[in-house]
Length: 112
Length: 109
Image: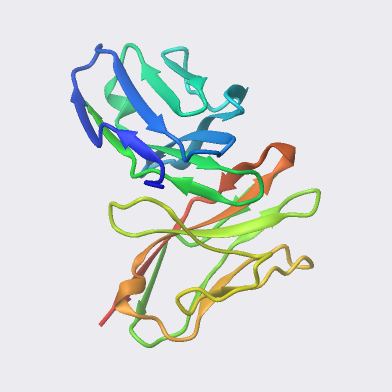
């Protein structure tokens, strides 16, 4: 298994543009998590899914953020419109219950 | 409320010195605790979990329920141990992982 795959690895966009981050979890994992990492706030859980169903999105900072998981092998995190304060590394992770998380390599987002 | 506290943002030691990265937690039930490590600009990796009671790369961590702590220890630090270390707690029935703020370990030659 190639692990959790995120794309793109780096994204630079202008303020106001729509940004879509993608994640492919490990096959067979039933949980998927989106985290944001910044120097100031550390690792923040944004949203997570169980069997493709969103369970807790209380960490999503604003309505500008949305996440979907249309099937067991794909999830997206969308920011529209993007702002400079959204600049961060966004990690996706997947897990099979009780077996710990596997993280992707992250997407480094820079909004200018 | 469930919470993980790592009181030190930075821990700086010399090679060969003992290391202890502190982690305290608050949780109403039976916790499941983890340590994750993140080397420079890489993904987070699971270092160890308390139920495994294993030693990875010379690191160990013991769950102390009386003190609600799960400190990470290594008797002799190596330069390659320099990284960010996150303590984390599984919360609730939905496998939700709550992270501490992280401690940066810097091991100097």
